[in-house]
Image 1 (cartoon, helix red, strand yellow):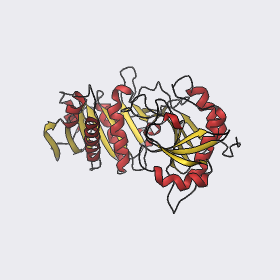
Image 2: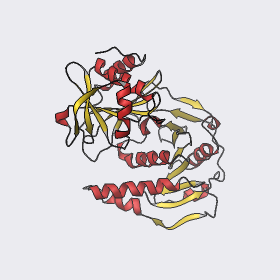
Image 3: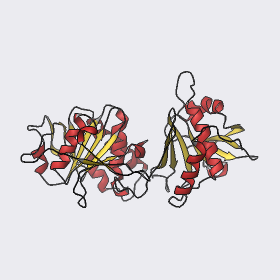
Image 4: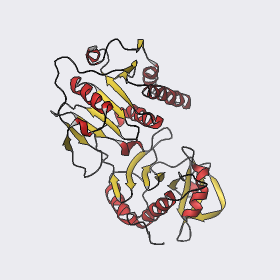
Length: 348
């Protein structure tokens, strides 16, 4: 197998294999194979096809293990030129180029949408930006990010990170959808049945929803046996709420996912001091939390969201920047300091 020429490929493969093999049930290729996949994806990400960035997804899967796949009569090498030309065929979400060793060489054998559980996937997001993922354990599940590579920076996702864990997966979907519209926005999640959040919102609210809209809440209450129709409805409901965050001001929902308002203006709660410090974290192995002033996090949107959660410690604030940065503000009961979780690596 050809030695990788992307300097970070082999170190990244070694770290991903060493740290992920014990943490994930992923069918990981060996370090040399993983390095070759990373190398090919990286150099492909720097090329262009008719001016477009190739957004490819490489899935390490044998042809016989992928259901209803498109199989090429002649397989292709991992040459970046070939991968770039194939890019438009797999730009749509959920499509992957199947890669598997053939005659001691990694070859692209076809295109597949269906992957066996825990397959390894390598996705090109932007030039020099790659994400290593794990396919879900069931058909309706979500892909799990294992690592993010950007240039010479290697980030291994910490599977034990508390922020937006599996029980809050709907918040993660909302975050992904908020980030996708690219306009920036704030989503405030407040306790159901508690009116105290109104003390931190300028009154009257221009776009107040009365009665609260239960669309997403109703879907979450009927998720015992998800169907394709239910999943499609969930996507529409999530995108609907996320879309409201593009309106100037904050969108408010309850912890039960009922919509309360959007376009709301955050104000400091009477009698509460200005938030002075926050603890910044990132769900990455080896990342040490740091203390910072709120002004270091971003502009007015971040400052107001931090103040809201500072004043309403039972609330959570999800903040998307126009540049793609995503922050979750929360105040865990075990800590005396407001936390700002940078979760970009979970959303790519």
